[in-house]
Image (cartoon, rainbow, N blue to C red; front, side, top):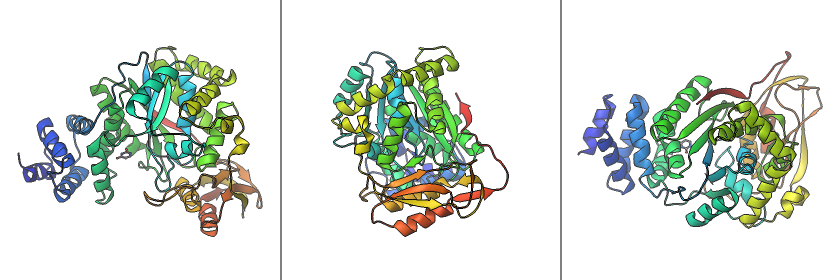
Length: 431
Ligand code: URA
């Protein structure tokens, strides 16, 4: 087989066979195919796309390029969750213990934040001594014993995706549906769960700018799941404002604790109950989404969901005093951002809010940036709220980094209208 022939085949719009895709991915993962040829192949794929069989073959080739996690020794129904990258998205911190408190096994490998989006690992590490670096066998044991573990993805998993993603990042080929779908699903399949719930973000700062494109991505990921014999549900959610009120690591953990206590923001609670209901039905604990939702609400009311979070923190070495007494979290100095006009808030640009939080030090400008867990933003108003000139829109928690720049960026995130508006969080579901 010849790489050049395969590049030309894709460039001219033909489909590749499984053998040809295996050859390309294995050759690239083991260094035999150079970056310049893979770049050309990625660009050809960006323009010509791939059919279902090609996308599935690409996903499997990527999954098989590294180790996979065998969860089969764990008794019970195993689930996993992925979000395509949100602002203020602390869903995993709530959903995982909520679902695990019912006996469903939540085995999750998470990522770190980059740019305007946060990462679950960074949030968890804001809890003193929390360890995200378990070995695969420790990970499996913990899921078996307490139904829940959240760790960082080990280097041995999906070797091809790491190289390919870095190359896509510098060749303008990230926003391609076959490439995004195979990248996400190859990691989820390698992690071994029976059911996967995918939160596909739509809007400012999301990979998918509109519902139409997000539906195409969701269908591609659901098709991969079906072909791999996994239950996959994609929930399309609105990212035209940040999720919940808090953005920034410690602030988001505090909001997750409040939500597990039944005192969380409406949108975050709604999203966790929606995602959780699908998983509860997939696991066969309830037959309808309505019953599943009631069961989950009861786990919040009776304190079992929060108790499971405490168990998770304890098992991974974290200091549980922070969960019982969130006031222990070290937070920056507070600055108020006030409205300079009156009206209904029509939009809070998630990208700008995430970027402002990153400038304060809550996120990473590049892979080596250090994170400041104590800074971030707490919104005081959401889209649809009416504000009078002088009302507090948000609180910035700051130390000494980029305060003016972040303040101005946050101010620019708000758009107003004189008409009442309604918002919708769940835009569609593909199942
Ligand atoms: N997230 C991933 O893991 N891969 C992509 O290609 C895009 C988002």
